[in-house]
Length: 172
Image (tube, rainbow, N blue to C red):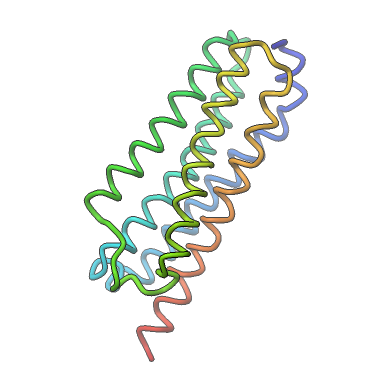
């Protein structure tokens, strides 16, 4: 992997870092609006944690990629550690704050399964990208795009649930 390849993706990773930091802030606002209800239903805490950590993953990957003249083995290792670390953090938190029948907003079995598949995909694609960076593939960064899109999708959806749906349903 050449420095010129990393440089050609520079603007993309700057944008990813900025968007992920901004969306993490939006998630905090949504969580604050719904804090009372969030604390009474353990499954919502898990979703909030997952959404925040997916944005953390995108932010860290963007920042790691922007480090100048970094050896490919270091960058690939950072991607691998980030993906596995974020997945582990989400799964451990999910163990202690599982979704249950009380987390009814988008809480059906189908919605839960879809979320889990998307979370695993979003965290494991950086592991693949990191492996490809270490192997010298010029196509490694392309595997980060679906990971980041999935993270955005889940985070936008969950921000809506936290800021709008939970308060609306609590008023009904």
